[in-house]
Amino acid sequence: MADYQTHEHDVLIIGAGGAGLRAAIEASRTGLKVGLVCKSLLGKAHTVMAEGGIAAALANVDDRDNWRVHFADTMRGGQYVNNWRMAEIHAKEAPDRVRELESWGAVFDRTPDGRILQRNFGGHRYPRLAHVGDRTGLELIRTLQDHGIHQGIDVHMEHTVVTLLKSGDRVSGVLAYERERGRFKVFKARSIVLATGGIGRAYKITSNSWEYTGDGHALAYDAGAELIDMEFVQFHPTGMIWPPSVMGILVTEGVRGEGGILTNKDGTRFMFGQIPDNYKAQTADNPEEGWRYCQGDKDARRPPELLTRDHVARCIVKEIKEGRGSPHGGVYLDIAWIKEKLPNAAEHIKRKLPSMYHQFKQLADIDITTEAMEIGPTTHYVMGGIRVDADTQMTTTVPGLFACGECASGINGANRLGGNSLSDIIVFGKRAGEYAAKFAQEHDAGSVDQAEVEEAARRALEPFERGAKEGSSAEGPYKVQYDLQEMMQDLVGIVRREDEMQRALEGLGKLWERAKRVAVHGHREYNPGWHTAIDLKNLLTVSEAVTRSALQRKESRGAHFRDDFEAKDPAFGSVNTVLRRGADGGMDVRLETIPEMPEHLKEVIKEMQ
Image 1 (cartoon, rainbow, N blue to C red):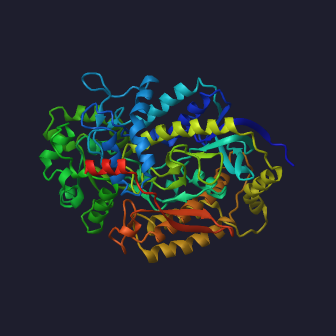
Image 2: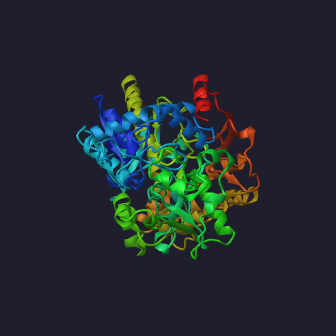
Image 3: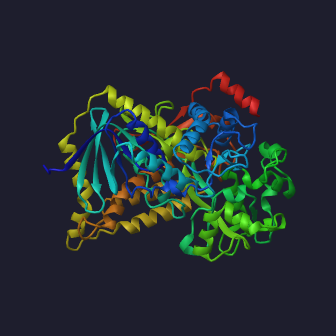
């Protein structure tokens, strides 16, 4: 038996984005020993790329806003398949979490009278997003790190978790390896919080960073946890299109919140002709009213560019497919047009959208104060994820295992509203840390099976053995990953249909077999090929979960749009898709009825309509 370096903690957090850091801060308040393991360097979590703002009903800009409106907006945006209890907790607690950030040193943009400024965003009835220009996620991470670094948290950077270790039914630790040197380490813990983010790297065009390979989803699934609603993958309407080196990089919704408009190659503002009936009462039917809304006119209706992300993304795809797209396969997002309204438009844009200005200038040589941006949909966020208890964030089937942030599921339903992700991670990150600490206080440490550790390490090293064989026909992991991304983009993307997803399922079977034969060369130190080989299993797991769930839901709802079932089906309006690892190792999928919403929340929905 190898003698692996071992660390012991009461609570172990996997992931150091906003959710993981907030969980670690909360757990450390109890005086327990808290460990934080992250795949990248501290401060490089994908949370820094969340630009537009944090959704919270502070009512600083429009005093009509409150938690009930926020709750109703979230449920409507999620097409009512959300976990209503999570949506309620989120709407009620988000304002306190934002004020808490402010007390910890977050420097938000301000109203003239000194309160936290809030901006408009798609799907939100009132200006609700507290922001720091278009660098809100960066400020969130800075604040949490500056505060958390003093809490005595034991941080292990650049470590990848290979497997969760169990003692009976409950978790007892993890096996991880140090990415720089390739050395395995065992982390023992009484409770574990997964905060690993999303799955975007399963697709070819994505705004997600390299870490987003579905690690938490796959780790929890392999340990016996359930995944729900994995068919709901959000394609953000606006990612960069040209040049190819920037394809998919996010263009914040804040551009549209500040007055940016979408046009096709003919210069037509096409969104005005594609307003759904259920949004017509809230949506401007002329450009002038939409502009007044973006300038804070309480009596104006929102411009159609600020409809929910799923709808805007499909409208863009429709323009492109019908031949009205831009030269490089997108459409145009124009904020420069506001020079017709503001004499100091260029300075205004640079002040409100500094990151976007520099991003386009440096990466595409485009000055967004004078010319339009060429944009198109990009894989952005997964609403589905690990099934957790709404109040405690503990997984429903694996004691001691908690999840929060994007890798957990429930709050967003079929489609996430912009800005809800940042408030989600601080609301439920706090709760996950709180209840993980409580679990650790109430339970003794479980045992770690050394044979289980050895078997996991052996499997992780198999690609080296195949690479060392003379005349081996094994292929490298990069080609398998590339083929997976191409297939998911083409067959399980924005618009889906039965025959294409069945082809994807067959393709996934072949990719699983290829992944079992991948080989890497060299040694364990500084070996990115090995890292990719480890990631493949997680990417294939979440890709299969998305495909099987999408096949099961024979309707169109939120971010899940089927060309062969274009309408919403009431039969699917109150069900979640649930996946769990079967006894034979296969992926079992079932539909499960969502518990009925209590009367007081039904009244809120009715009132807000």
